[in-house]
Length: 312
Image (cartoon, rainbow, N blue to C red):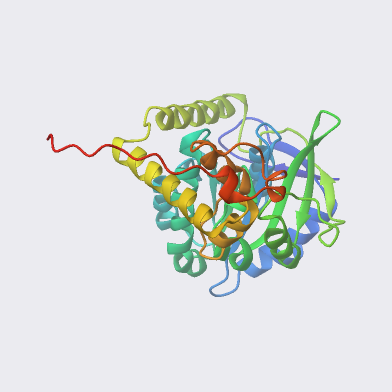
């Protein structure tokens, strides 16, 4: 492990933490030199379960590549992320720190996907180092995940201990995305990485007081999301979507997996588990595992008809 020391005049003591030797070597020999070239940027994706240490590792990496990184360039929603990209100076690091849960999570991810795609030119021209922290890599836009992200770092726990990671390079993450998209699985015989390492829980942006400011900002971002539930219009569109998914699957007699693959061909991300949950609203029972042995015309009921009223 390499010892990293950041001297920041804003704090009394230098910030010290450790970085995996191989990880540091890649930043020294590949990432940092490439950011000094014309129209070159770097998009790094860090994903993993809640509480696994995604943000901790992201801050350590971001601080090493860009020692000027501070909370002003750590964003929690697509709007602030866009503003940070336009305000950033050449070579700086911008972090999108995922802070959303529940029903709001997918909407926020859709927003960051759109922002990433639309801001690609700005990111290249400014040679920016962008770190995107997400619960799972498979929710990323296909273009960003396969072609624009330089690498994926998957953070995980081992025997209840945090601080482990696996790195997938450009080629491996492409195969992982294509192979694991349906089941959201990181375990495949043909997708194996030997690039593994450890990190430790040091807050690399500042002292304890500064860390508390970060936690408050993140907490407020989460509260703001939870205070904005789905509108009546959004609920209506979701109901219409569910009916259409149900009907397409029924009329074509598709399995949950086949339906998921069909939607995937049109860049509509929906897992077989989601489709199973949607169909359960209309009387379908069982899981995608036992559906293969059944006839759909035997287990699929007619869609309930609603009475039409002329009342306004």
